[in-house]
Image (cartoon, rainbow, N blue to C red; front, side, top):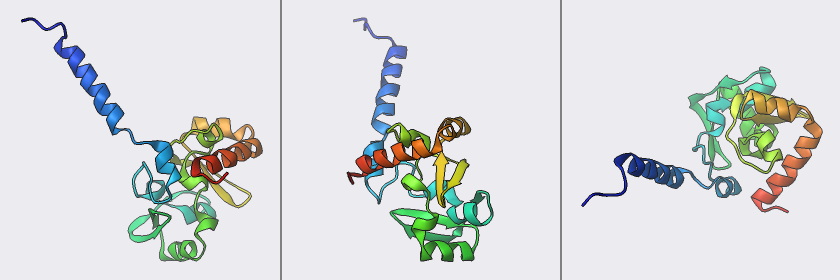
Length: 157
C-alpha cells in the first residue's frame, strides 16, 4: 500500500513537533524567580558589576560566582562579587536580565550582554543592537511600559 505522505513531509512534521515541544514557556519561566529559560547562568556569564565599575561588559569567571534569584552570577573579580552580594538589586539588570525593548512590548527575549545602557543607576539589557536602537528612541516611555509589563508578568499588579 502506498502512503500519501512523503518522507520529507513526515520529517518536516517531526521537526515542527520537536521545535514546539522544546520551546519552554517563556512567560512562566520569567514569572518564577528561580527559573530562567536561558538556563541557570545569569546574563550569559557576564559580570553585572563590570557595567558599573569598568563601564563595559566583562565576562565573569566560573570560579568567582554567586547564586542569587535562582540564577548563578559570574564575576570578573572577587571585589565585584563582594559588591554584588552586598546589594544584588543595585547591580542586577532589570527584568531579570530579559530584553528591555521586548519587555516594553510585553514580550520576553534573551539578551545580548553587549547591548546595554545604565539609566538612573539601573542596568538595562537588550536582545540586539537593533532592539537597543528602538528602545533608545524613548527610553523613559519604554522603561515605564516595560515596568508595567514586568509587574503583570511577575504577577505583582
